[in-house]
Image 1 (cartoon, rainbow over the protein chains, first blue to last red):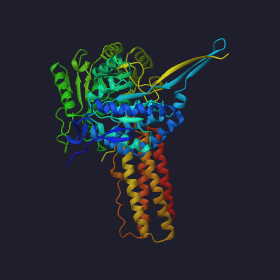
Image 2 (cartoon, helix red, strand yellow):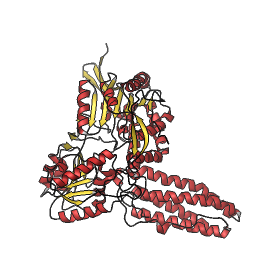
Image 3 (cartoon, rainbow over the protein chains, first blue to last red):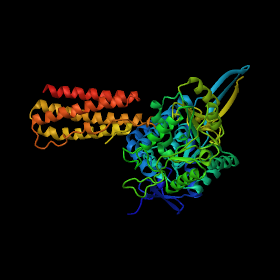
Image 4 (cartoon, rainbow over the protein chains, first blue to last red):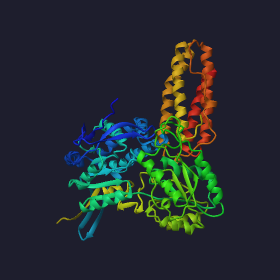
Length: 484
Length: 142
């Protein structure tokens, strides 16, 4: 049986890629190919950007409320197709179906938030800045923006940016991850039914050639990126060279501290979900567990026991708690980190390497894996593994935890479980990461707050979604006016 | 089968609401009085709304932050044999309807307690239990 070959979405048409190079899309649970994706080239980017550029003048003149109405219709269409999007997502990405549903929910929440454009995009004014002179600042759309998004959240991440960009009057090009292109294709099929004007939203499939085509294109005003830190640095630098606005969100090594006063009965489920949710493949995942004080042994015992209860399997099965990792290559990478942990002397408490899932002999599964006695200088305590592997770094007090958090190369997110308000305040005040959870395992800002880290986890000024996103997608034109 | 997550609780509810709708849609052909027919037809009409409520509850309340396992909750006590109505008489249909509605009431009330960490979901489940209680009361009046 021949596999479906995906197409680009340009100027409201489904078109074959100019490039003839293709790649395979896999179901990570079955280990089978499910589609073929074109690896586009600069010619494909040129077509998409040209369509978006052509659409811009009329779209920017469309009143903001009218632009928002397209999003209202799109939200309804997403709700109607909610399950279909979630199931497509799980099929190509592997995450458990509830996690896929949660991701689609977050995607829709961004559409909902963006419909507030008539409040969120307003400028400001001051009369009499000098005698008889008034000054006001308008927020104006700028032109064509683009998003380059990762494989771990195939639906949501593009929509941290896209709805805000277009509702502000810009036009858009999305490049989905070549590993998981089917979800965004499904989303564009739904969007196509809404009847946006031609060229307002476009999608180009591909890999590095498409990325470089976007970064170098003179008609692209700005780029939003989410992915690994090395790629985020590359994107940030290259956008700087070509004079583009950029927000590049990178990797993470998130520490979750457990203080002796923590309510573990209440907190354990969210703690486990933090480390093993999405098979550890999210930038907000807990990676280092840092228990403090005399309850450490008890904490570790309960944590390991809870991890053992996670049912690993095909994410499409409602009973599955944790799906496979996203690809064979990612599985190899995670396996190599486990080997590295053993080699460097950490104690392997729970080994997920040999997990067998009945009926899925070729899936890219890695079971929950936990190392104890990890030291801060070990590789598994420093590098982003992006898999269900936990490093336990025992800390003597809160100061040691904060030191651990602030000496990682990344500064994306961190959490503390505690019953002490004093400890919580000190922690959230002194840690560098920008997303902080208190008795919350996954400190995920919702659409109306900004999403992004600090340090090597974020390059650029304006983070994803939140109110500030309108600054990224608009230029504030200041008018100073006097009449005689 | 264990119901270990928010999604599994709502998905099971969706499954039995769909099965119940199918049952009533078939059973209406075998009713033996106008009163029974009117009752079952009202269940069919309402059944589509109940499915929509379950689906909307699942869609609008699932987020990454609440993907926390549910303990000690399984399908078995809430599985019924009332999915086949060939050869049923009017009284058989009413008896089956009582079982189905009582099962739904029990399930939603139990699920609301299991998922009390999500108050909005618990409210929706209690609402569903209330709707099924009203249906059961109607069956009992015939």
